[in-house]
Image 1 (tube, rainbow over the protein chains, first blue to last red):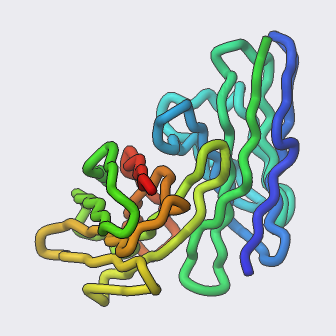
Image 2 (image 1 turned 180 degrees about the vertical axis):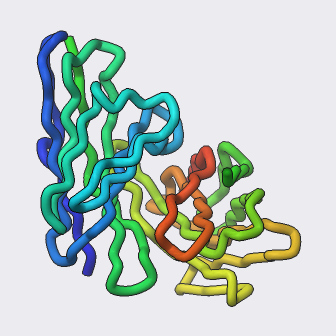
Length: 116
Length: 113
């Protein structure tokens, strides 16, 4: 199979603090992972593409200094929301590309972030 | 870049009926078209996909068709069941497989018993 985990599943933090979210591919190596943001009743919005061993590629309008991405190994990518504000509250989902087959993307279970 | 349009935004059917969700894409270079099912508060799950070298693919009650000339693809669910109720997203990916997926806005499918 192709299993992707994400931690934590939910987090509540105060304004001004930073939060780190981990995304792991459990049974395959992923040179490329993706970070999405999803608002209620909306589609998945790609924030950035995370490449192992190199800098992430951010989508237009996404602040790279606010959403720090690190892909230090073939099974782990992290997203750090720095100086969080209430408007950063959202559902953050990662996905990992499985290079063993046809490059399908498999999603993590998501992290619900609430900033108070 | 790629643009994916998805219709309808909501679809209500009776249990046992068929459901069809349609998507169009803009980039003729797209060659991979997955469909994801997302239940409330959960992750999107890949349910079926199709590549540009085939026109139709079927997996039990689910089928996907692709018309490359018209740049549209559709998801067909037969004999719907209440557990099929969820949001369904289509997506398109151009290039060699190392590019990103572009998602449609989603279709909320409600199957009434």
